[in-house]
Image 1 (cartoon, rainbow, N blue to C red):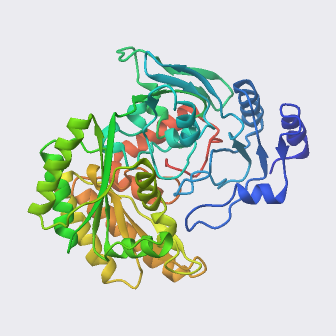
Image 2: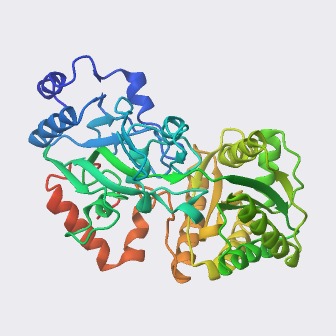
Image 3: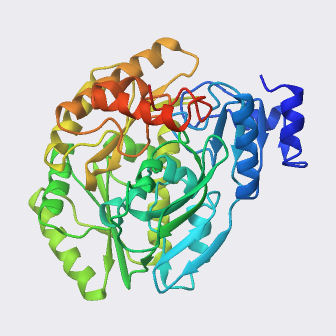
Amino acid sequence: MISETVYAELSTVLEGRLTRSKSELNQHGLSETWFPLTPPEVVAYPETTEEVSRLMNICHAHEVPVTAFGAGTSLEGQTLAAKGGLSVDFSRMNRVIRINDADMDAVVQPGITREALNLELRTTGLMFPVDPGANASLGGMAMTRASGTTAVKYGTMKENVIGLEVVLADGTVIHTGSRARKSASGYDLTSLFVGSEGTLGLITEMTVRLHGQPEAISAAVCSFDEITPAVQAVIATIQIGLPMARIEFLDAESVDAVNKYSGAEFPLKPHLFVEFHGSESGVAEQVEMFGEIVHEFGGSDFQWASKAEDRTALWTMRHHAYWACLALRKGAKAVVTDISVPISKLAQAVEDTAADIAASPIDGPILGHVGDGNFHAILLVDPNDPEEIKLAKELAHRMAERALALGGTITGEHGIGMGKKGLMAEEHGAAWGLMGQIKAAMDPKNILNPGKLVP
């Protein structure tokens, strides 16, 4: 419990920006998925690195648990205060500090969202490409090592975060990385923090890599009669090195959900949503080559979206697919999976997963970023039915085991949090214990997001 004495001490750091309002506590205790309401005891709204440092110093002295909160879009319970304590909301640390056009990078605060950053960049000819679907905060995206629809071309947060300012458990402020394009200087601490889910420190500033806005963009959808040829077309596309910007898969049930939710009229078949970036001639060549692959595997002709507004509508439908799937069942929540496998094993993984779901009483539309071997099943459950949640988690566990057997991973982008913690030993073995040792060395009092990720 946060005592009145500790609350008063924290209040001296944040005048008027510390709250125990029930509505705000509950807002910070909600999850996008199946987890029950898990509110913190207090929510803080810092505006500077110094304030975060002072908060951590106080919490370290009194052993108060601290959980970072960005936009709250994580899917494995990362932002839930599992042990109570303080939720540090970074929504007010949302500035672009500096855009370095010539070096194609930007220094930003962690609370800025990807859409807000790209709005700031609109006149520079540059963009930040990582697109997880939700309008997530960049700090949260870094901490979960997020990726999304464009990762097949531009990489994940791992490749696009090049430096960090981090407040450690005791309030110490450190800087990792540099703006140089490469370094051989010591341990790669930036990569250690990216994906650490707030268990090692709190990001207060980050340097991200930017990319040039493409000269030409074309997007399209095409359908297939079966799942297998659609996935095989993706594999063939990747294997020949065709530089797709996005290549997304939706099964027939996901397409049905999108139609109902967004008013679309796609045929009820497996679909690929694709996008090409480059020069006018380059995009034209990519389109022609991909068309040949699609026809080879029995796909339909493309439905094109070359105008910006049409592309926006198309990708908005894809980004809303999660909520569309939830809408298939009134009041449903989801146990969300996101395994990733080597591209050569993708067809087998998708086929076996579809068969497993079909044999279960749980509905589970399948969709994903198949260009990098990553796909999801949205397992729909009644959040008040423990038996359904149990069956869905068993399905998800089998998916994870299948991914590991095929040389893959239990999560391609959603992270571990509380939801997948029980699978970590199976994937990492003794290396998971080493992660725990690193955590213990950096946070010996275990106050940073306790109960998540590590042993």
